[in-house]
Structures are given as structure tokens and as C-alpha cells.
Amino acid sequence: MPVTGDRLVGLLRDGLPAGEVIGVALSGGGDSTALLHLCLAAGLRVEAVTVDHRLRAESAAEAAGVAAACAALGLRHEVRVWEHGALAGNVMDAARRARMALVADWARGRGIGCVALGHTRDDQAETLLMGLARSAGLTGLSGMRPGFALDGVRFLRPLLAAGRAELRDWLRGRGIPWVDDPSNEDARYQRVRARRALTALEPLGITAAGLATVAGNLARAQAALALQVRAAGRHLREAAGALQLGPEFRDEPEEIRRQLVLAAVGWLAGADYPPRAADLARFLAAMREGRDATLAGCRHRRGWLLREARALRGIEGGLWDGRWRVTGAGEVRALGDAGLRLCDWRATGLPRAVMAVTPGLWQGDRLLAAPAAGFGAATATVARPFHLFGLSD
Ligand SMILES: Nc1ncnc2c1ncn2[C@@H]1O[C@H](COP(=O)(O)OP(=O)(O)OP(=O)(O)O)[C@@H](O)[C@H]1O
Image (cartoon, rainbow, N blue to C red):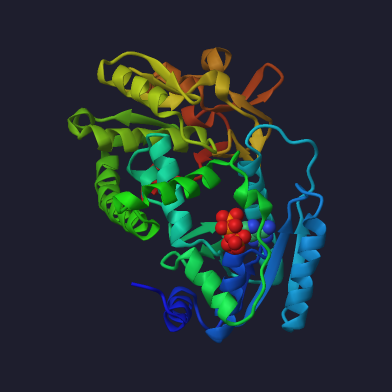
């Protein structure tokens, strides 16, 4: 069904909370310019932010142009600059992460709880194609979520049911200009190639709208599966920051075991990216056969999933290894073999390997406390228990 102007405005009314100021992430491109003007047409109160990525010579002038357009509308607008040195690796991914952090920081500073992004069903279709290209599983093929939280800010995508062309038609009909980012035509980027492939798929009846529907179907299937994964989480018993696999674990369907282990690895190691599918498959096979194996800073050993000793980090953001809240005097380091020799860890009934990667409080070579072993005056708890971690979506 074509999306008419009224329906577009309706998407905004349905998709964004009324009665609070909405932050609009405004690149100045067609999608987010339409987002801004549709918000205004829907009677929402908005402020806007533009991130200048400093990746192209013209970016500062373009951001200034967006600022001028907002000023002409009487809207409060800010430009946030991504300060970076020389970049290597996946620049687009780094830019996206930096952008989201800058936008979230802006929103918090302005007391704005909800920020709208201009993703459309075309973005959704391209995301699905890109997932196919990396042979993704259900989660990777479920498309972008309509909303998510980051750094205490709620991000919403109210235009996921709208087409890019329809948004541009709506803008043209009102004489509202926008600026196309030249990198949207740069075939070095996979997203641009995915967009072009969509045109090639049309004779087969595969359209952006159809693919967005498929992504929605898969997202519903994944949401149902997530409930099963969460329920199966009871087969993993948390103790001393590790997880013991109950005997029922091996009877769970393969996909449920796979998603549970993925969640367990995320909880143990807190990595930004999930492990590669082939590495995860190898790890799962080892678990099934009862063999020791490692994956992304984690380890399987005799029916336990635990942190790999050599992957342990120091204190970050107040937490040891990114997840332990430790109180007490002394330097926090893993117990390791040396620490185990200095306390009575056997009384815990837990395996030696599990206890070795729990925190100890040290003064030089002197062990002051080993909280997980009940030795000394200190406490250590994992900040977020496993049953609350990553199993809900
Ligand atoms: N430089 C930026 N500053 C602020 N928000 C941005 C910026 N770039 C992207 N966004 C936000 O993220 C959304 C998706 O980004 P993406 O790069 O996929 O944009 P796009 O599809 O080119 O959209 P647009 O046509 O609005 O640029 C945009 O619609 C916008 O809300």
C-alpha cells in the first residue's frame, strides 16, 4: 500500500511519544529531513542534532547548512563534531558508533529522553540483504528493531514502514530541500551495493517492502524463540561468575543451545561483537563432545562456561573485568594459582578453574581477600546476574 502524507504523519503520531520533546538525529539527507518535517506536521515538539563526522571536506559546511535550515524553522539545533585521528578498519562502523554516542550524549545534556532516527523500510531491506551476505542467523535477518536504549536514551525508528522514495516525494510536494550524501552512491560500501542489488531483484518480485515484511516475520519468530531461550536459561546455574551446564542443557534444540551460549559468552566477556559463526559452531561441537575449548575470551571446561584467565582485564568503569563489583582494600587481580594456594577455596565446592578467575584483593604478593572463597573482609558480586542478561531480546 502506498504511504500517503496523512499516513506518514500518522506513523509519527503512533511511533513517538507526545507530550515530551523529541530529539531528531538530522543528517540533512532525505530520510531525516522528512522525519523532522513530519514530526512538525504531527504537532510534536522537537530539537535536532547533526553529527559532523569530519570524513569529507564539505561536512562542516553541510552541518552549518542544516543548522541554518533549523534556525529558519525556529528550532533548537546543535552540531556535534566527531574528533578523531587517522582511521583504519571499518570506518563506517566506527562512524556509526561514534555518532550514536555523540547523539546520546547530546540528548542527555538537553534532558531529552527519546531520539528519533530516520531509517526506512529500504534500510530494513538492505540490512536483510547484508545479513544474507554474511549467512546470518535469525537475529541477523530480523532487521532493525523499532526501538532500543543506549546510554540511558531511548532511540526510536518511526519510519520503518515508510519508503525512501515516498519520503522524498512528500518533501518535493512541499518544496523542502535536502542534501544527498555522496557516500550513498559509493559502491565501495556494502549498503550501496545492497541498494543496487534490490533493483536487480525486482523482476523476481522481490521488493524493499516485501523484504521488510520478511524481516518483520523473522523478528516475530525470533521474539518467540527468545522466550524459549530465556526459559532454557534455567539450565545454566550461575556460581562465582561462571555458569554450570545442567544435564537438561544438552537436550535443548540446537538453536536454543546456540543462542544460550551466545548470551553466556556476552555475559562472561562483554565483547562488542558476537563471535564468528564458524567459531561458535566449533565451540558448540566441543561442548557437545565434552571437550575443553575456548571462544572469545571464554572457556568450556567439564560442563562449565567460564572466563579465560588470559583474557581478564583490569578495572573499567568501576568494575573489574567489566562485570565484577568489588569492595575492599587492595589491588584487584584474579586469584590465579598463587591466590588459590593462599586460601581455602575447596570449601566452596566449585572447580579450581572457576575459582582461579574470580577476583582477589592483593597487596603485592600478599592476598588480602578472596571474596568468592569467603576469605578476608571484602565483597565481590557480578554486577548483572546472568538471568537478567541479554536473554530478553
Ligand atoms: N550525521 C548525522 N547526524 C545526525 N544524525 C544522523 C547522521 N547520519 C545519520 N543520522 C541518523 O541516522 C539515520 C540513519 O542513518 P543512515 O546513515 O542510514 O542515513 P540515511 O539513510 O542516509 O538517512 P538520511 O537520508 O537522513 O541521511 C538517519 O536517518 C538519521 O536519523
